Length: 100
Image 1 (cartoon, one colour):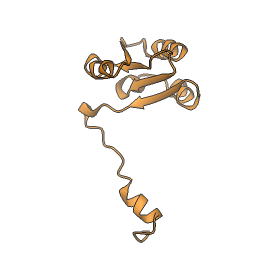
Image 2 (cartoon, one colour):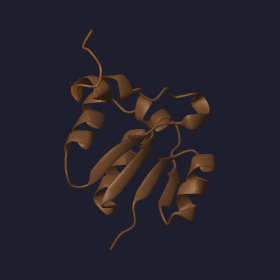
Image 3 (spheres, one colour):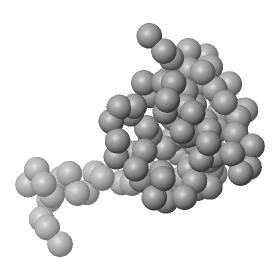
């Protein structure tokens, strides 16, 4: 079975390599080609937020919607990515908090 592929920077790639993921550093301007190649080779493609931002929205959207392969944009934690706080929404849905 083919290993997942990560498209991103070398630092993040080092961590993914420890988990058995094949990593590829993408040169500016090569993002779309790298995504297409990775999708042809791997069952799972992890795309860093930085690389994803340089892929045309239509191409990235189609890759994210298509299965297989599973394609996921991975947030860059060094850039201070703000994760969505779903706790209030979940409490409302469970009836533990009044809806606003």
